[in-house]
Length: 399
Image (cartoon, rainbow, N blue to C red; front, side, top):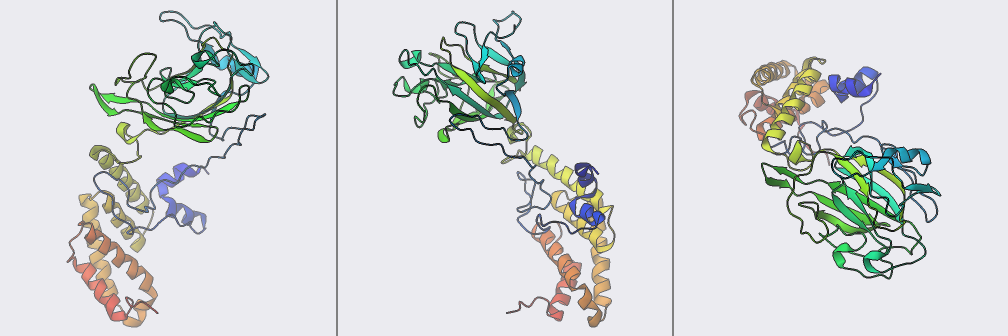
């Protein structure tokens, strides 16, 4: 059985019921603050998707690269075969050629004056892991010592430079967003040792020439935070101030040939989901994106309700109204709630006890719909059921 399609078709509660097992607790309906114009889910919403499982990798040591997580896309794994994922970075109008960089002792080593290289694969927003080492034999100073660069989408550069006891201009320091922002610290190991960069990259987004999201870079070096969501605006560059520039959706990862035999290893990335500014579901969404998402959630709940019956079906339909107050469903819930309240009222008190939990669930749902202004606070079925709860003493808190 393929779990995800069944979840979408039935809803999680119906799926576990069909399997004959108890559903895990993933939240309760009619519980936290309701969705609003910029948040498609309620607080603690049981309908919010569960995070996908990712098997974590292992950390690198001073001598051995770690293993990437299970969902990573590997760009260089230390083998000569993975060199086929890279090519030269040609001048405009020229075709790429196989890279002249070499694989030595499990590392991708720059051959000075052979030119930049780039991945054949193109990607955008990502978590990037890359390890690099400057030559152990120290030569040169400032920008002339162990210099290279990591260009996200071939544009935004995170500086690679041997700054171990080697000052240079601050916005060109190792771990800087080159020409934009210096690192917050110098966390480099000695020359010849591998430095571990973990980078979170979000590209700038412009629409009609206006900045919707300037993009940002977060950089860790050897576990130390160097860049904390540093805004990009544009790609930066040598001698040039960064100005707002639209980035494409995807681009290659480029590594710089700056004339030094810098080595790289253990290169992988994880694509990141779209941001709210481009139709994703992180953070605060636009009103349009929120409305579309809420309609989709409501449709899923209505489809789930079609697999149910009785009170469970009524409650699922009522739950769908929290996301979209669809007229036909609204009328159906009102009619069923009216019928349900009348049926409970007609029961002898002794027979109501067996339905205590069910009645309390319906009352909670109607109270939530009233709080959310989906039904009026004076809704007759709610008043009837609240009176029954009070008469039976079910509203009393046991001490």
